[in-house]
Image (cartoon, rainbow, N blue to C red):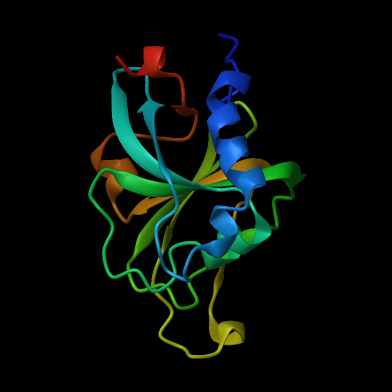
Length: 167
């Protein structure tokens, strides 16, 4: 078994933490994009470059991709948690307009589960289904629905934020 390094290195987090502590992100309007970062999904066959927005605060994670009308084909949003989430924790699609895939990852960026999620037409969040992880996780990556399958990304593949891994 190959040892995987954590998905976030201290070097990769320093610029992001500077933005968080400066308060710049707190003033973002409701559906504006967060700052983007380059990453890649790595399978046994290839590395697939992606561009991700990183949601680290409770407010950013709660807002997610709500009310966005489109998402670029190779773009997504990474939800980062400081504490491990239980397997029964999940995401919903309240006020989310585009169908999405979600990959639930461990702290090293290894994909433990992938689910497809449909927009919820209800104006009440309580009427929207929850897409439970089924595995404990620290990270969740949302991409356009069908992205993981079309790129051959499966459970056991991983996310990397290290530029050297994406070549």
